Length: 100
Image 1 (tube, one colour):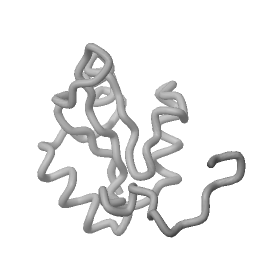
Image 2 (cartoon, rainbow, N blue to C red):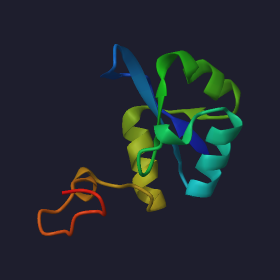
Image 3 (cartoon, rainbow, N blue to C red):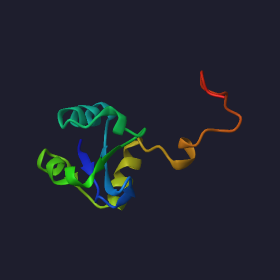
């Protein structure tokens, strides 16, 4: 069981972002994120988005730094990976309450 973090290379909101994942269980990931003070709103179905300035701190706290391909490989192997296709709402799916 490991918490993994890739390189901060994803641009958004004027900064670079990294992905923080677990290679075995979401409860482990949420516990690590909570202990590190990462807000739950940063969770995106199978990973947390974390800004580049937190990267070294999270590695020091125990996250294993891996390349992006290794992170995705291990996330897939864990069965926790949510694909881009799974993230998109289906046109035939009913709308969530309060949404048109």
